[in-house]
Length: 451
Ligand code: PLP
View 1 (cartoon, rainbow, N blue to C red):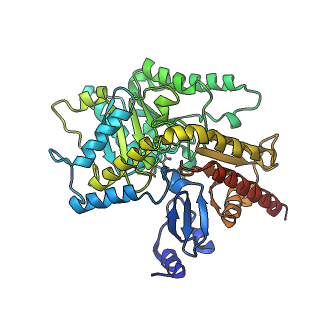
View 2 (cartoon, rainbow, N blue to C red):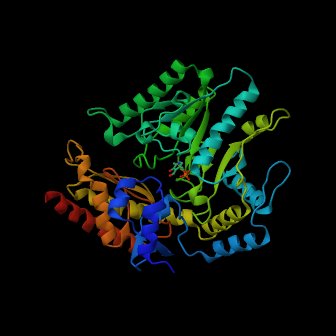
View 3 (cartoon, helix red, strand yellow):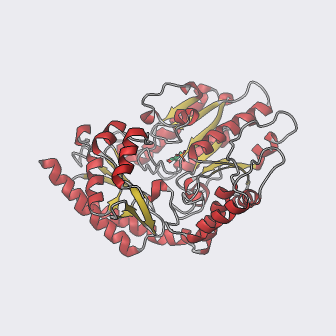
């Protein structure tokens, strides 16, 4: 058994961390995570934490699910892997595709499997481009995205991702047109929420007309923006953006990488919660609760009918598309979500989680608590009235996260934000305990900042 110290030394010498300041890691060290149980994770020293981030928005059914582990092991024994190109397939992949077609809204009946959310969105755009290419030339290419969006980190999906996360990248952004984020908390002073919504819709229609409707292939949107700051759009935004897409023949890609499989109390939030039927749903994370890397891009009959016509093949795929062990994990995970009625449960416990976190708004440092169900975020400010931010050097999100970790809770820091996306199986008493830890940790941070 390696000691935590040895793991850390090997890490510092060789491991490149995702989404991290590598300089800060080197200086400050890392927590070596080593165990898990239900809604908790343990570090190598045996300290136990509430997993306030659900792995990374993904461990929806919690840790230690023997059934999922057994399903994976059984599949690994039978057939650990085989490709599914051309006329090859495997049972878990076809069964999971059928299950997703059953769960997804009406005409979404065809599934492309990949290994993660970036791959799911990348594939969504490839599918849309292939569709328009098959319909005839010149073909629609442009994709409408939004500031603050996070759609992934491949070369294509970092382009879809809003410019906030594009540091050190200067690629093919002419493919993408960015609209404003539907960020009500930071809307211009003096503008009402309705006025702001009208502005967003007008901006989108103006952009479509300026680019030329015949050039715009798709609009991509997370139902609630995640990494961009858990931004819940104003009421009516989904329907009105969807209607604009329909008006101009633009495909609507719903990036449900975070929001699907129960996080907002539904299997697919775009349809079940926000009432729109996208042309494509990109999903990952909660599809396997993180037990295996897996994504599913679910497309409509209309798109499938065109791309499956005789003629040019859809030459897109990955070695691990349709991975049997990953699909076996997905199938068992969805079986658990259904059997334990996790969506219904989240519709009850999610509002309690929201209420518990909203209570923190009485603290001077907390500008806004926002989000829905088990997708929440706390925004810290220097001044509640003006919403002015603290200087970046104050590292407020990181300080709060460190104070939480000392008290047994992992939350994600992102600038002035702290994000919470815990497993969906939290009990009410555990929600209350998390609320208490957050209060103590934010208060401790307020004291630190005064020093
Ligand atoms: N889309 C959304 C909304 C995400 O939050 C993420 C990751 O957090 C992605 C796409 C990319 O997923 P992955 O990191 O699995 O590639």
